[in-house]
Length: 382
Image (cartoon, rainbow, N blue to C red; front, side):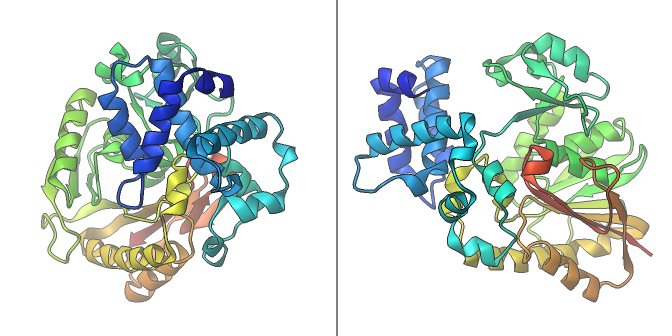
């Protein structure tokens, strides 16, 4: 990787351009996506080199002296990335904990050696095949495999170099790009064919499409989000995936709900600090703040309180966030249970450790699931 980037000055210049433009208001992954669209004529392997260089820079920024020119720091980050992939033990635990994450994080969650080491690894690209089609899809795509002890039946890892969004299999709706932890959330919901569900913060619909598959496209799913453009993307994705058992409506998270329907299940995949995605999006480590965590915790409590009345008696409420801070996980759960004693904790089985059961709360750590960090809580309404 180092020689490849140094050999192409255009790729190095482009990586420098992305990093120079990225800030709190303009996340690096968004800037990168935009710049690669503008530079659409460059070869796919150069696009991959630019992406890896940008993410390596933010992964190893704690090791890079600001006195050096930006291009020199980028190349140093690439060297460190390659060193870690081959000789991870050459970095001490103390060094990684002190340099790889902001200091404030240790006051908000448990910062362990295995977690920080997982953050420094390149993330795996997970796919979700249509039900029962994982093995056949792996053969069609190539360079794609089902883990030997796959925790989820339809999950695959892709290690090829193709742009999957341009493959005929993608356009035929045979798979979705979806992290393994996000797939686990829908599985933990256990939706049944014929039920009525509400995906309250549906976004662009990744979990909704999975819920639809698990329900064999039977029953009904309401999808809501505060942004109309996200629901428009959901509409296009659902058409490609042939998921037709849903309706969509705007919802700003307030007490006025998008429908008077009472649901068998409500999934609240709430906005969060995203700390669970820091291995995949290392720039976010340096833009997220303690104040963000506290403000989001308050928002999550409000969203849960507003969504709870939509659950029918005997129905389920599932809360999920791709973060691991106490303020956004245990604190939110405690606040909700104090306010809504009629909701009793569900018995949750850890998909990544089937022998491990948790009453109401489940943490999924990147070093255990090889995906994003995720927290899930679940209740049944009496």
